[in-house]
Amino acid sequence: MKRTFSSRSDLESFIQNELLTTNEAMQILGVSRARMNNMQKEGKITPVKNVGKTVLYLLSDIEERKEEQGIIKLWIYIPALFKI
Image 1 (tube, helix red, strand yellow):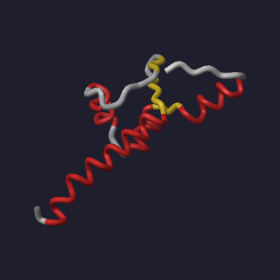
Image 2 (image 1 turned 120 degrees about the horizontal axis):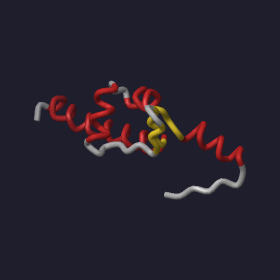
Image 3 (image 1 turned 30 degrees about the vertical axis):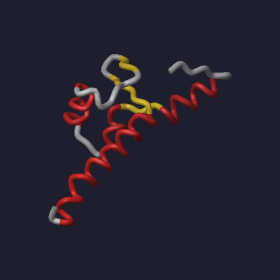
Image 4 (image 1 turned 90 degrees about the vertical axis):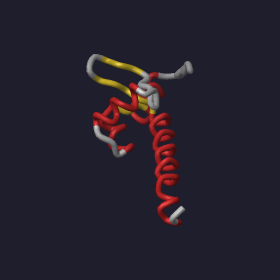
């Protein structure tokens, strides 16, 4: 997806509000660095940019993954709740 910005301040706002470092993404997802690396290797999350040792993710991608995790966890716990 290609994005265009009408001004430098729009670009800076996008970077500040829509891009996450690995540590920020880990906090949102509630996972360890090892799990984060595994999810990337498994193709469950995809960074938008690697800058040296810094990896950047889109907030929307991380929020989507967080929602998927919640659905997966729900399916794990439902049978236990109803002894299915």
